[in-house]
Image (cartoon, rainbow, N blue to C red; front, side, top):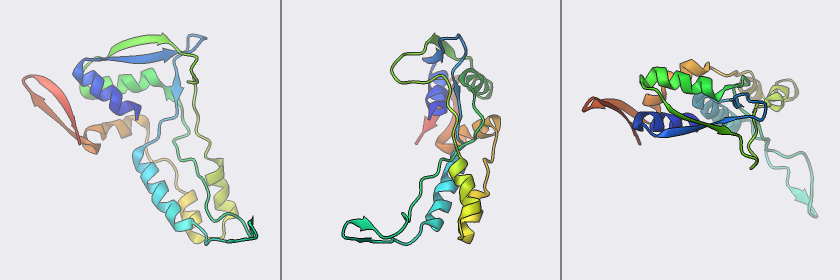
Length: 166
């Protein structure tokens, strides 16, 4: 997850690389709050159907499992995310801004949660309604406040802030 890598680099004083699109705009990403991912995964366990089996290599019914995209559905500039981290960590990032490479990276991501939303109206299972009615729980600022708590803790040593993970 980008914010953990960026947080570590900011605290260590190491450079972070930020991409600019061909039109000079900042890359935008649809960041996902980890609590939403965990809740979605746990809820999805409750809505898996029974296996329909197969006859002579042909399936005898619809697939019992589904794939759901879980996300915030609100893309923000990566530079905005870095600014939030700088404020929370009380340290400026050493930013290296470069042109976006042509290696398959994209200037904009937006999570499509329409399949999960359709589940609410098409699924007969009560658990499915509970799962699909869940919406992203936090904005970017709110989720980043928890970064030091997720995988470690912040501690001050020798006038330097260090993020300790795991």
